[in-house]
Image (cartoon, rainbow, N blue to C red):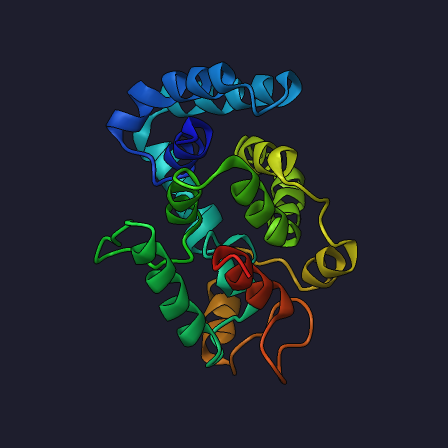
Length: 225
């Protein structure tokens, strides 16, 4: 079981008091496993310091603004490849079935494409398969990382850690497609209301025919196909 994925899942989860106490331990666990290079470990320590050394309300509010109220930073992977289109439902069902096949039962409140949940799943897979699945999602991870860089968010380090483990670089055409979409402003309530009321948004390459090729490739990899 790869401790790194579990520790990154913890660091990227909604911050609460226990996480503030555990953040530094998570980074040390990642360091001990040796999957993440030192330069990124230094950035992960800054994330841990931010989580443990800030007012809990402040870090919770910032987390919600980033990942819950900003669709372009959503931690739900299929939000970026399917948006709210009909293809997302079957993809979700497929993920739940795959998790169960590997003995991972979902919490009722979680969606299967939620990145911390996905990382828990990766932690029980062989290293090579886990790195390959990170590669299939690398275009989404890199696009989010670039948006976090613009915001100077310490959470960017967690995405850098995942990209450093990936067995392949991100598809730059897919990254550019994601970054070409307008970045959300969580304080622009009128624009947010309009965005949620509009027709479903399709993120990334054209998915109107057979679904997103990246999402299908990810599912095929999980099935060993």
